[in-house]
Image (cartoon, rainbow, N blue to C red; front, side, top):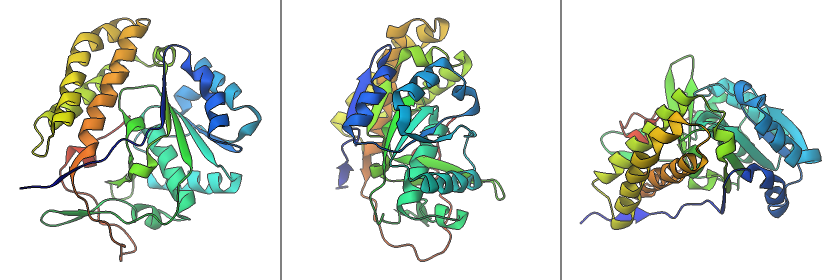
Length: 298
């Protein structure tokens, strides 16, 4: 009989509802933030909602990185880590899609693990050994907290996965540490109303994908199946409506909850994954073919 492991999500708090971004300041107070790095993308950086978040951060803002690219390149992440280290950031606030959230996770990881070059960064990727062994390098220090204001349904805010692409080789590396899961998530449909509808729709279908793969997983359990089926039901009822009308905040919020349920089921129901120290200077690329290890985010 296969022994499966269900790891409880690491999210501490969820604030949901129109205008919930106005509580960012309170949550920064609660986690004791003093030096905050704001991570976003060129498109999202100029939105009024992002300006609202800047005001909430206030004088604690010591770094703003608004250069995140889709599928963030390893070189860019090493640059971000260097800037965050120099700014002595103690909390990261991510406003944007999955690549933005992943970049904040990598920044927290990189500063904690003293990463300075790309080879060190990819050394923290998931390792795969043929035919079926998957393992990760253990962390040596606690990473700073990440707070997330998501703009899509990619669900990066609900797990400890983070992806990066080595542009020279074209290989995508994936880190997987539950400890990197954002501690606080703000589900604000006023923010997501500014997301282009095609992007909202495609990331919604990614949530459908997460839920379906979990429904058919060999190591599924009653709790993961219930979450996955609930996600599919909510997306069926609300995704089309939220695409058609960005002002339908109830539908958008229902989709956010569905994305959370889909990825929580997908990433917490898994066979035990061994950890051991990596001996190579560069990690072996993750080529398991697992959707959980290779999913792309915009």
